[in-house]
Image (cartoon, rainbow, N blue to C red; front, side, top):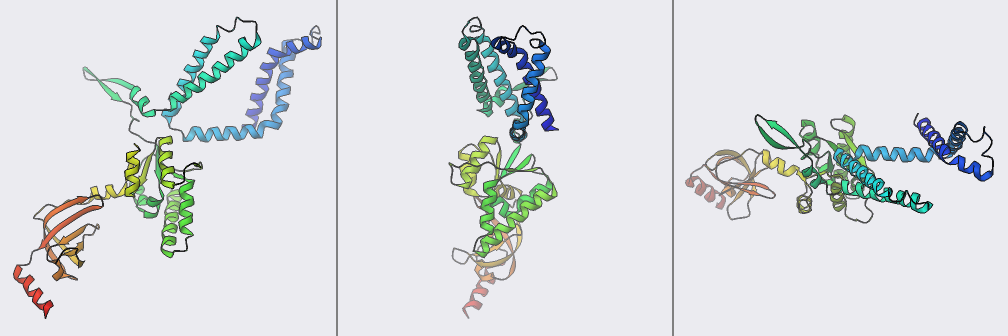
Length: 372
């Protein structure tokens, strides 16, 4: 069907060119006086036939270009399409207005070639202006609506909406993105670049057994996301040959697509924020969802090891939060009740400091038993 449409467009375009230029060619060959040769119907049919025959050789190449253009359009955010096409049309209209100065000339280069160059140049310039500095265009595109008797300025609904969420290698290996997607907290379309997939495959083929297991787990989670159709997921086939690091490629892709990077890597998070790329950090989300504790609150913990300071013990809550227990050294391997003294939020997570509910006498007895 698509090939038929392409051939039909070729034929119609050839017919239009035949109506315009074949009369000049008949004059050149001296046969313009023959009525059945030099008439609009003949000119249209001859031009259409020539270009239809030409389409038989070019239809495959044109079809590939059309398919590639369709992929680009479907992957491009709507705001890019609107601003880019609008700015391109404006540029071409300006070119038409300027070209009216050259149409009066009898010189072919001046009345034909220069207007064509102007249209191509200003159209491309408009397209570039419309598709760059997209954040500034969002601020320009505003709508006003009435709220009661007052008019309030309202941003478009899509201002803070990013269509693509780019997954890095770490978040796929981590696996929590699968559970997060199932809950419905992630919207839009997940975008997995090919260079991330290649890195994941390289890790899965590693000689190191631990790395190999991690890589295969990441591939398994990616396949589950793709097969279960919980959320739209696309593969990005492009690459940045001038950039070596995969993380840098992801950041550049996020800039080009106006996308959000989904990661659990602390360094990736900081670098992306420094380059004004929005990041969804799963670790930050997990920390935000952990239950809050306040000083004086009681906890029941299992002390598992010594702390870094003298006589400290370390325990962990069910969500992985570290609890540093004062004098916990004497209770290693036991489950005890503790009272929270303070909590500290760090970049790596939250730490809770606590002390046992037991009396000082009990601690002294433990110390004597360990000494004996």
